[in-house]
Length: 220
Image 1 (cartoon, rainbow, N blue to C red):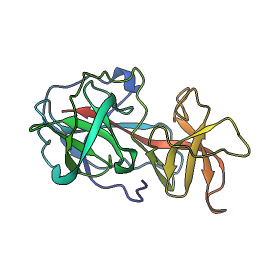
Image 2: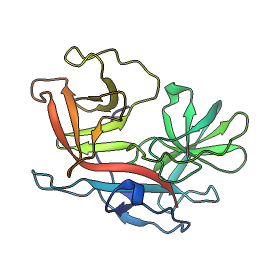
Image 3: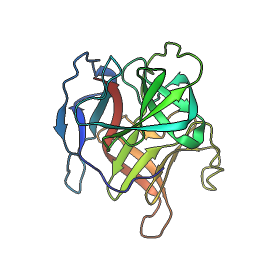
């Protein structure tokens, strides 16, 4: 799924490495907008979106649409989670990569980290406890001229002829982000973070790109 515009979100903008982001039990959130940068990005902004509180209720500013007729299965931790208890749900076609337990055997799912709209869906079975990854991968990325979304785990994107052993990690408005399978396609060894972009058009050529903003998810 691709998004072409950054919308106003309820988020917490944090500095430093994601591994240093503390979990918060507070339901308070601060409205903000996607940070703007000069043409030369000097550092990557980290944004943690916290749309659901610990009681399973939407945070202020977020709206919920109930989707009926389909139950989902939620067994694994969301790769973009900075807090425990956030799930990725299947089937893959519904694109639910960040979901929180809520009431009446439902989960609240955020499809777009730049958007304040969520879905409420019923789930099958029980939700086992899941831990946030030690080094979470962003739910979404903003590059200069491109917005990128996390790919659905397990889907085969084929191969890049120039890098046959790489895999695709993010789908962008004008291309895709690929990298070695041992990582998540993001080079965090310097500021700003960088990714390797493969463009769809000549106007968006292949090459290394700086990450302006990286979006993660957490619990309010």
